[in-house]
Length: 89
Image 1: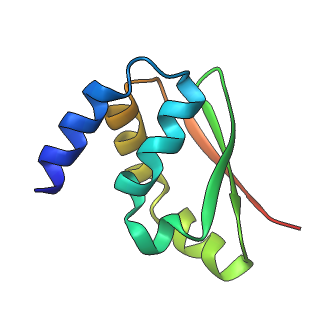
Image 2 (image 1 turned 90 degrees about the horizontal axis):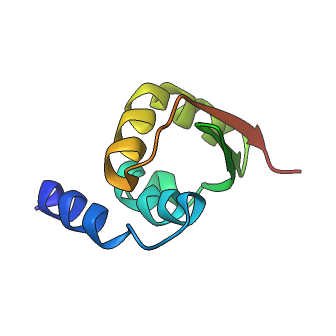
């Protein structure tokens, strides 16, 4: 079911800006629990910046960085060359 959602969501996002497409793909790429603790704040030249709610969640998201890069790129249909995490102040 998750693969079906990823594929159909990717097709429906094509009319949005690249950043909006990434924001919409965030929940599917991360899963609900991780997605609730971080949010995409910018996208430029393949680099995604994600604001994380705390240092503990930073560690969890950093551990899934490679997976998130590939999933966000695949679902949103935009190039993702890296993710930079910052802790929310």
